[in-house]
Image 1 (cartoon, rainbow, N blue to C red):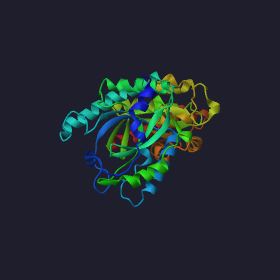
Image 2: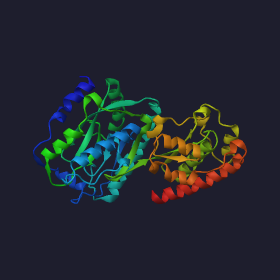
Image 3: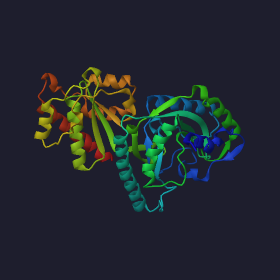
Image 4: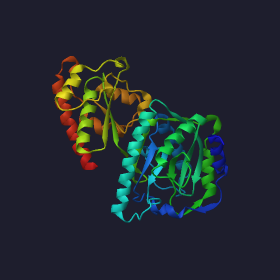
Length: 386
């Protein structure tokens, strides 16, 4: 049976209207407190970070539903935009961990092990499928087992579905799941108690996706990441991926990425840096030999996959956890891409304003020394928080 045909058969229930009175699922109490706030709920998962269009559309759907249900006390606290993601594969959670979550030492070890394995597989996928994408159409807003409201996502073509399943199966070998992949984005969780399905159904009917104008979202292998969560509002990438962006993408960003990767590996910290240019006219220009010489002189084996400047493309919005703007040009580029401030501010505070050795403001040695010192301070703060 073709995958899309199987998907339609398996999700035929999505067209059933929400009506009547029902009680929230008994397991929801593990995630949501009676007052609608989120309870501690620790685990691990593998997700696609959303692209720009997805990050724009999903909050609008959430807002419409919340406004239509205003005063009904049906929904838990709103989920922040930073939590928006499409899950590829669940890993470890109190609901399915194979051990007693109250045994914190054993449970936390299972989480660490799952994240280490998932991070490795995610990196393999990123490398194997670089440049490809999965297109998904927003399919239907539904009540998911009386725990949450979700936006079902349907692959646009058989090829999209096949690529999605190829990635999914790589994780199945480690932690097989007792249920099939049903791609979705969580919009909201219910508040514990009785739900007025008639009022809820009216709100969903108003916000519902229409096939003729359903948005199509793009998900990239490079946006795949393992995540640890401590509750349903708090997710952390592992590893954290930082995109260093300077004007030319040939000197400061390349040195910063190499320095950060060297120091993070030395300290055993899950952080990875990449280098990009804020301006398209430097695309393909070679990185000066002086950059490699300075890195090697200071004991850093350079990553020469950055031998040429690479322009920060709009599609890379979802590829990184955060962005470090080293220059005003980089700030402008990220602003044009509408990258949220919370994904820029933290790393940029440490790296912004390093002088450019390209035009003789400082030597490459001086720029290296300043970047090295700043990277050390950034990792000190990261390690303390981590």
